[in-house]
Each structure stands twice: as C-alpha cells, then as structure tokens.
Image 1 (cartoon, rainbow, N blue to C red):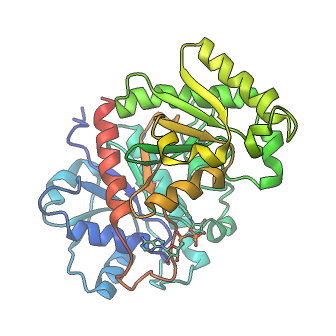
Image 2 (cartoon, protein in one colour):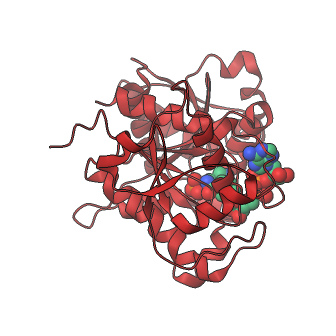
Length: 337
Ligand SMILES: NC(=O)C1=CN([C@@H]2O[C@H](COP(=O)(O)OP(=O)(O)OC[C@H]3O[C@@H](n4cnc5c(N)ncnc54)[C@H](O)[C@@H]3O)[C@@H](O)[C@H]2O)C=CC1
Ligand SMILES: NCC(=O)COP(=O)(O)O
C-alpha cells in the first residue's frame, strides 16, 4: 500500500513553448531547504534536458515512477516520461508536441487518483495548440473534471483563484461573455455555493466559510431596473443556500464588493463570469495568486498566469505563483487527509 504522505506532487509540464518548463526547472533548482515540496514531472524528459541546458541549469533528469520520486528528488529531477518528439522552441508552439502535453495531464491525474501522487499541479497550456490533437476542452478545469468522471458522471468543477484572504470563484468559466446571462441559473449557483462551502471547510480548514455573491448587472440590478438576473436568479440561490445553513450573502454590486474592506469580510466571493473574478485578484496579486480547482476528488492547483511566450526560455519571469501553487497543493492535500 502506498503511504501517500510520502507521495510526491504530480506536476504536468504544460506547453513546451511556454514559461512553465522554465519555472519547474528553476523551482527544482531551488528545492534545497525544503521550501518546495517533492514533486515528479509528467512530461518529455529529453525536452526538459534541452530546456535546462538552454537556461544554464545543471540538473540531472531521471526517468521515474511516483513511488521512487521521494528518494530521487533530493539529488535529481524525477520525470515520468511521456514519449514524443518535443522540440525546444521557446515562444513557438509546435503542433507535434500537443499529444505529449495532453497525455502528461491525463497521466498526472490518473496517478493522483490512484493515490501514487498527493495532488496535481499543472503548468500553463496554450489551448489553441492542443485542439489539432483532439483536445476539446476550453481549459484544464474542464479537462480535469472529465478525467475525474466516475460511472459516467462528470463532477462540476469550480475555478478558484486564491491569495491569502482574497479568494474568487467565477460561476461561469471559459465561456463567451454574451452567453453568461443564460448560463447563470439558480441551480448552478446553489451547487457552486455548496461545493465552495464544503471545500473551503475540508481543504482550507475554514470551519464556517463566509461566501459573498456578486451581482451580474451594474448596482446588482438596481432593484430590477437594470437587469433582472440579480433579483430573479442570484437572490433566490443565496436564499436557498442560507436555508441550508451556509453562510452566504448577496448579491452585492460587483464594483464595490472588491473594495478591500468589503471583500475582507468574506472568505470567498462568487463572481458571475471569468473576468469579473480574475481582474481584481490579478490586479492585487498577479505574482502570488494560485489557481485551484474545487469540486474534484483530487487536489489541483496551478500558477495564476499563462504561457508567457515572451519570457519562455529566457530565465526571466517570476516563479512566485508557481511556488505558491506547489505549497498550496501540499497544504490542501494534507488538510484533506
Ligand atoms: N492554467 C493555464 O493553463 C493558463 C493558460 N493560459 C494561456 O496562456 C496563454 C497566454 O495568455 P495571456 O493572456 O497572454 O497571459 P500570460 O499570463 O501568459 O501573460 C500575460 C502577461 O503576463 C506576463 N507574465 C506571465 N507570467 C509571468 C511570470 N511568471 N512572470 C512575469 N511575467 C509574467 C507575460 O509576460 C505577459 O506580459 C493563452 O493561451 C492562455 O489560454 C492563461 C492562463 C492560465
Ligand atoms: N485565466 C485562468 C485560466 O483560464 C486557467 O484555466 P485552466 O486552464 O486552469 O482551466
């Protein structure tokens, strides 16, 4: 039986043309002192050797399975090799690398679901580069939910961006803005509130999570005079969650909800769409916020940023959010034990 306390984190390599591999290699280089929890990379070992060499990092890269990662990590980077031809072309995604990127995520999830790894930490992907290889999801969040389907049932995944005391959850995720009003249903918001409350308690040790809902329209609809969704869809969801004993409030006008004295009164804010949630948190904490997927049977985190093609292969760029993602995955996995 696997002692999952000693199991590594599973880090998927992400887009090879992006900054993700650079940051993984740099964080491995900084592992001494125990600040970075042990991890195993799912990706192409030969490509990682080439990127390390480009960055001037002297790193031994060893093919491994998760069970051996803890022993290897102090002296070499364990890599669960995903075979394929992955050229090292920073800033220029290659169609031929896409299947490796997709398989790396699937393998990391499979090993984590099997208990061989403690949590999944994903490096950023460039979705457009993956569609030619059959990828059909708008992001990791949706792909991870599909990979976690059980008996044909796909869990509802929540995207949460978390930074110290500010946590935001967009109720709709990767969808065009014009589709948002029809996708926001009372049922979706109730389910979102339930999952958020449960996972904040279970994974973040917040005994009674306080959740605020943002409105959709200016001034949360101004009593139904500037749009009806706030009154007719969001308010009933808040009332239903309150009936269930969940500490919820709202809908609040979104513009002033992100005024610090307001958001500090809540453990998490449910926003109605992607940018309503992500603009405030990336504005105050771009360097250190972490993207977390809730609602899954596994822990998944990732840095809050994307592939940063302009920085890939240069050694520049901040590893702070990626480091925070590793540390948060470690803490969440521990909290859920
Ligand atoms: N979890 C994931 O897989 C994510 C993937 N993406 C993907 O990334 C691609 C590029 O997206 P963009 O909107 O351009 O966002 P981006 O985050 O890649 O870049 C935006 C700006 O932030 C800078 N930046 C990003 N990471 C940085 C770091 N670690 N240190 C310093 N500066 C950094 C970049 O240089 C750029 O100027 C898209 O294909 C998008 O879908 C975006 C967000 C998350
Ligand atoms: N802007 C963050 C983002 O879109 C990340 O999406 P995902 O790949 O983690 O689903």
